[in-house]
Image (cartoon, rainbow, N blue to C red; front, side):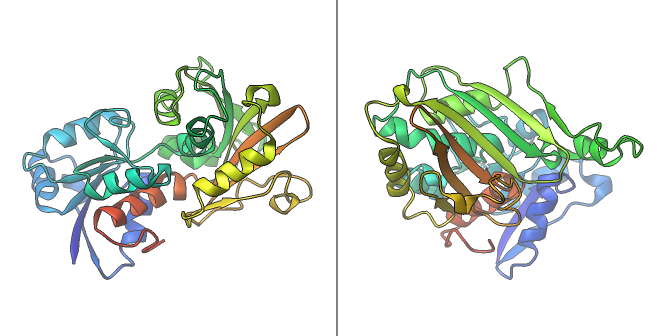
Length: 312
């Protein structure tokens, strides 16, 4: 029986991780009473005595929790605080076998952001194989359900004015183009320049689509089929990544791409649509599943020497 402490169990991601772990007979989840969840001594005890602690906290609180880890117990941090820190392993197993090996051995692991996962897994293989220059000026747009914004955004959307239910239909944000995920996207995709990133939140609970448009002349004299084959080869041994053929209509519903089609799974669908001059790379997945809690469980499994899909 492996003991796991979730620090921040009452948050959106923490609750989902707890629900996934409590069904397993190989995991004992250590709980902290509601009236003591900010008690530093109790938190320190739980962090140092559990085999792995999962931090589901705001960035500053996550940094404080790490300082409590005097015994240097293993940690998975679901916040943004350590995602580009050189002392932390980045928890995106599909980046390659070396990344999986690093995750298995990690003491300090940073769970990836929801938006960056799709962007990195679409772009990094093209850069690694020389199909796309790392100096490329890339644009990324994305849409997510409102659960990605945490409790405050969930309450905002779910208590909207019933006389004007479409008031919060779709909203762009991060309009200063300095979203906290951008450094993570740039670093792990292998780009020399930060991408322009424009996210949107829509009036549904969860599910997301990440989009990266590319003009054909940006590709290094290769066809779209070469790009598709590159993705297929890169992820052929990754059970959670599903690759569609170019302009594959099976991915669509009435010619439209449904952002919730991967909900309640740990799957990510990668696809490419376009024409002779322009294409768009797309990733579809559950922002609370593969984008957050599912990714944490996948990393936890690897750190414990288990099969990635255990409990997923």
